[in-house]
Length: 83
Image (spheres, one colour):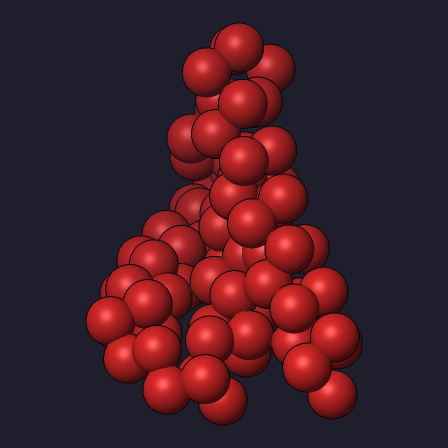
């Protein structure tokens, strides 16, 4: 089970780094659905990895990160041009 949780953590970390890289290189916009999905998925994956290890500061960060991504994603999808 530990290996699976670690793989989740690495997948989430990869999602965060990919999102940051793509935005930094101008290949992705901050208000794109894909950017927010990468951040939300990363937060969920890393959160699943750190929760069983009682890493509460890291888990709190993932809750905050995921909440920001989710709220941003909802706002993007509610825009008239997104429909």
